[in-house]
Length: 287
Image 1 (cartoon, rainbow, N blue to C red):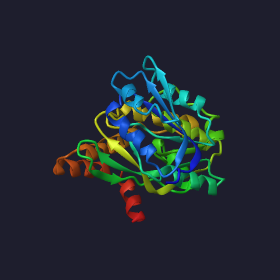
Image 2: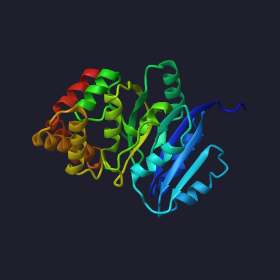
Image 3: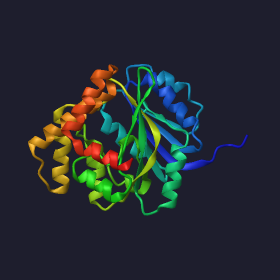
């Protein structure tokens, strides 16, 4: 059997207490159609069995583990990964999610063929942690102008753990200590500095929806922080009224994803659409 092709990609995955998921995540990297140059997992002071699980992969020559004795937070873990990532491209992923087999290869090939692009993401399939069922697919804009417009509205123009970035670009930036909203702030700065973005239409990433995920426990203060970044970076002013509506849209959308009761599920979806009907219109136009 021929060995897999090695591609010059560093994967950065910060981990905190994802022991029950991390084996599936690492396996998805191992089973990818190409082999990454390095997989950097930054353990942020986990108190579960994460390290023990990772010990089973100690013979994986491209696996590098950075271990914090105490929890230092997501942005510190991400920056520690950036400090040692040496690949031509730097790819983000989260250890409670799963890479589809051709994600690395598809994004690598896209970047090799589109040298004008600095950051490429992709769509995702959201799936239920409890039963493994697919919930729905994301619907991110594909072209730079559309992605830029989303960021300027204070929205995420791409899904953070799907990003695949030129190493020479990513290494110029660092995540701010403020959390959450650290991903919006970083990519908004890249955008303002002239970096070019794209998204692949296909979903090459399985994103786990569970009670411990940050978006499930979102607070209105988190939304306020993101819009504060937006106002600072793009020189605009967001109304408190819109922040409240946007928070309700996200809250009900996540409740739609999490609910197992059909009545509650679609009631939350209806409420989500009521708070931000433009989202539904955009999705329907893509059909």
